[in-house]
Length: 121
Image (cartoon, rainbow, N blue to C red; front, side, top):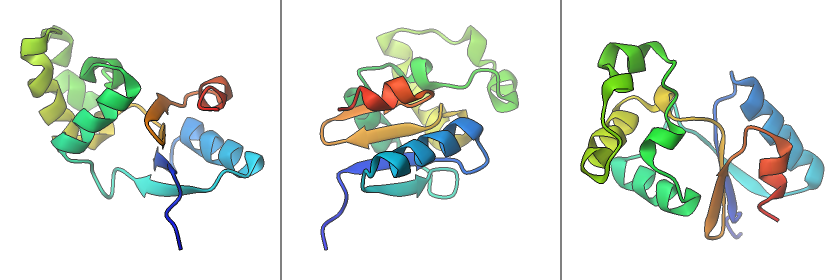
């Protein structure tokens, strides 16, 4: 049996994440689910995700989360020199990762709406 090419980093408690799963189901896409809060991505996996997203770590960080406030992330730099600090924080505190993220062969989107999902083609 082959592994689906599409994967979703999913939080079942999140309305947007549940909506993305429902959309994938409705369109008949085969996908795998990674409950990223239970199975947190490593720093290397986050780097790979960022490459596929074409994004920086601060672009996918939920800065309104309490842990982000506790860490003072609003004051962190947003340069190449700061990138690893952000990635390590995301790996240590996966709740900070924007959700859901949907991956296909070679691409990814933060799927906060169906237009983002549909852009994956």
